[in-house]
Length: 174
Image (tube, rainbow, N blue to C red; front, top):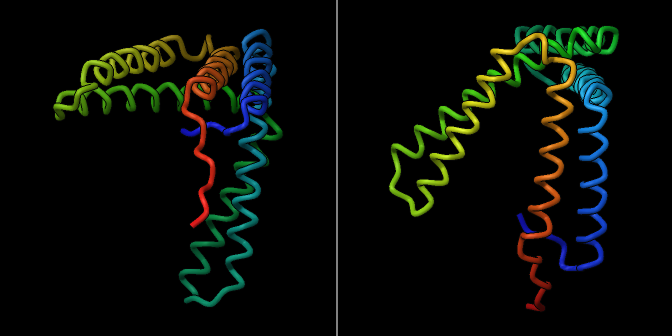
C-alpha cells in the first residue's frame, strides 16, 4: 500500500480512520449493524446489476440463470435489511469460518515456502486461526459485538499502515 504523498492528507486520513476505529470499538453493536445493513444494500445493488445484464444477448439458459441469480441477490439483500440483527449473527459465523480458513492457509504458506519473512507468516497464521476459532467457538453469543470490534481494529491497523507506508512517489515527466 502506498500512502498519499501529501503529509497533511496522510495525517488527516489516519486521524479519520482512528476516529472511526474508536467509535466502532466503543459502539460495536452499532458498527456491526451498520456493516450488516451495508452488505444488504450491496446485495440489492448486485441483484439489480444482474437484472440489467439480462438485457444483453445470450441464450435463454444464460438469461434464466442470471435472472435467478438476480432474484437471489435481491431477496437476500431485502432479508438482510428487514432483519439486520439476525443477519449479523449469521455473518459473524461466516466471518469466523473465513478468518479461521485464512489462518490455515497462512500456516500452509509458511510451511510451503522459504521466504525471509516465513516466521512472520507463521505467527500471522497462528493468530488468525486462533481468532477465527474463537469467533466460531463463542458463536452466537458474541455475534452482537464481535464484528464491530473486529472492524474497529481493522480500521486502526489501516491507519497505522497509512502512517508507516512509504509515500507515493511524485509523478515524473516522461
